[in-house]
Length: 268
Image 1 (cartoon, rainbow, N blue to C red):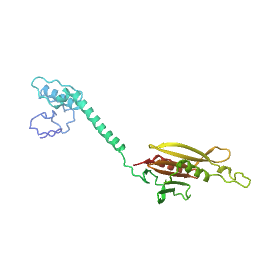
Image 2 (tube, rainbow, N blue to C red; image 1 turned 45 degrees about the horizontal axis):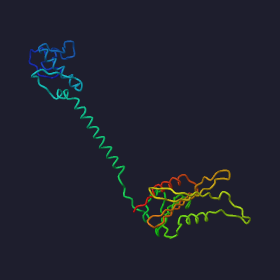
Image 3 (tube, rainbow, N blue to C red; image 1 turned 90 degrees about the vertical axis):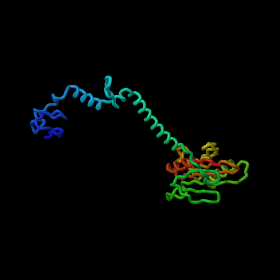
């Protein structure tokens, strides 16, 4: 016959299963006749079995002291040197984390080879701005929103040998933006009177002179509409001029133009 609990073969006449200790005599081994221990097995057997099961469940914490001649296993070895196992595991995690973060940092900081767009000047233009004119040392970009050149970028070279290139360039722009006057010398449209702001800024190591042109929204307000921006810089004997237009004072256009300016960089 076979044990109803573990299936082990049992000779006729035996009252207990030698493998699991189940008392025989009923088809349902869960009945009161079942015993958890087998008297035919000595106490040392159950002690070692409980010890083994306890060590498997709690091998990180349970310490077992072996007597002379008793066989040792891997769990004994782990128990003796658990501090080194824990330190090794922690070191392994730290090394993996370091390699991952180093890889990410290297990827983010990887030098990108910048190729100049016009002569020695590199810049980046958002895809929303279309290159409408190119060649002859000039590039023109405009926002495709059925508003003509209300949002645009013009980049071009100036080979003039003027001693005061920037001053002359800005003066020409100011003269073109003067308001219209009637026959009596009065300004025809007071909202069309510009306010000019000039200064010098550094962009990615390069010196750029700029002229900003502001307008009013109405008579009671300050000059807040930045409609035109002109920039000029000299590099390797050439002058680079940039004209930015945001005639409708669009926030989207301002964002596109600012992003373009931040990308300006001379590449030799």
